[in-house]
Image 1 (cartoon, helix red, strand yellow):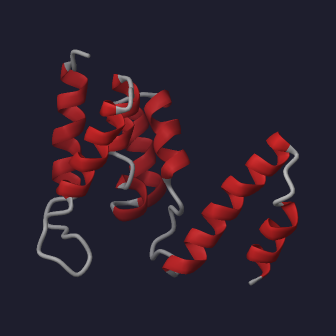
Image 2 (spheres, rainbow, N blue to C red):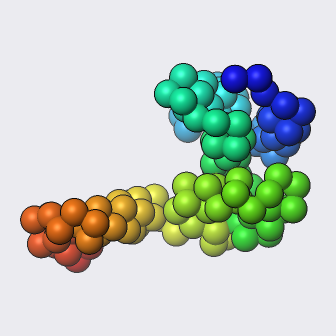
Length: 131
């Protein structure tokens, strides 16, 4: 896949908005995470739109909430913004506690799978949400 200037623009954008952030409990620049996830996505067949969204996947929850999402849509497009929104577990500032966000995200994902597949996880999903 040949990457366009739009990918380069997203890479610069991600680098700037996450500038100064470090991985939790390390001195590793946060952009290392962004680059790593993007590389994995492309190795598994992500197209350029998806690769751009991966570069921006933490932008909303870590760098400005709903306002950031609107900026991403304006600068990149609705498809990218929709993917980023799907990867975002909150746009609230300050963010709710980590476990609360992850439970809600997991429950949403699991319930979608349950509805799609009529799976037996529905009871487990409900129990997880109540814990």
